[in-house]
Image 1 (cartoon, one colour):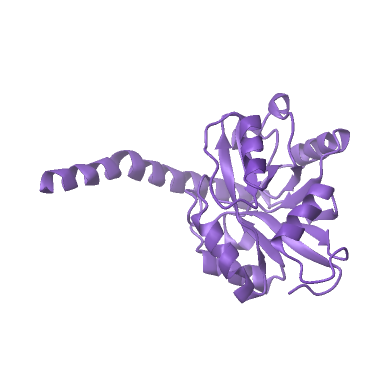
Image 2: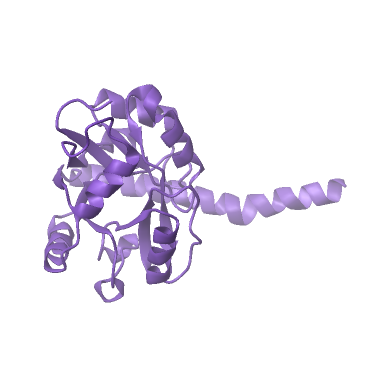
Length: 245
């Protein structure tokens, strides 16, 4: 499955299980294969079903699939990688970090300090297993540089990922992991171990500002539609079912 001494890993991809994305699992896997990404983690918002499906199907596309989820903690978002179920959302950040570890996963902080995108504030970031120091969605490089400086100052392993909400963004940022320390087939567990030990390099480029503005707008429209469905249409459909009985 792995050719050479390193692999390219995109650890932060959204699918149609997220309220702000509409890409199906199979299309994501097919696209990742086409652009020579070797391993992916689908990390939807507080939903793990699509990620588990992708992890199971990944080998059919010659990929390594890593199960994961982007958890909404009380203090911001957290990537739980290598878990088989969704940690409870809304809990304290550090409490969620410990829960992820108890599940056998690793806790990676996505887009730290980007408060408008639910990034964890510096004052709340007491511990984690790795920091996303390059996120393709950043409008400027300032927050990415700030995250990288913080990671170096506190000796946190660093990762880069696309935070893709559309096919075209997959692989725009990725983490390159050294595979030389494993003799046999490189697995999802090996990827997580390499991240924890810092055996990786980051590559990527930011999304063009015009495309970022467009995607933010599209995401807001999708989110508004999703919220309307959840708060208006869903209760109405439930009410209709009750009256039919």
